[in-house]
Amino acid sequence: MTDNFAKTAEQMAAFQKIWTESMTQMMQTAFSMAPNSAPPEVLRQIRSGLFQALAQSWDEFMRSPQFLEAMRQWMDTAVNFRKMSNDFMARVRNELQAPSREDIDAVMLNVRHMEKRLLDQVEELSNQINELNRRLGNGEIHTPGPKTARTQTQKTRGIRRRGGSKVQNA
Image (cartoon, rainbow, N blue to C red; front, top):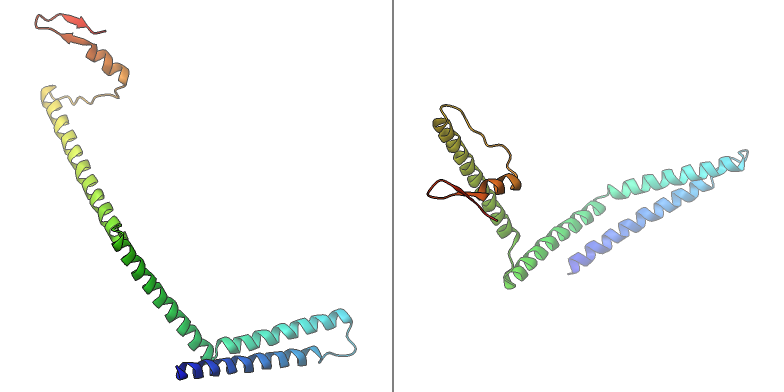
């Protein structure tokens, strides 16, 4: 506990030092203008000096070992929090007997495999039907055209009796 407090105090002292230096540089830049320059030019010089001082101080701050160590600790904490929350949510789903992501992925994979097998079987049956049509039709392949509901109902209306005459259904 004391070690963590000492590290934090050290990091804060380094941050305070960098901030104080950047403010000092900005103030020096603001008051180091030429007396012969016009007011708009003075303002541009002040602005560019301030931006340059800020950029330099923040570049030093972000490259400092203290900042890099703090960022590493923050990232480690974020990763650990994510793992803990994922584990907690997995336990909640398990307690509620809800499916997990892995369960859903496994079901989807099985459905895809089943769909592929069905499509392969339908294609094989189609090939067998085409072969039978070729054998029965004297070498001609009979491919049925697109059937509509109307053409199918017209064909099913006429039912043959034993005697060979058609009876119309109403």
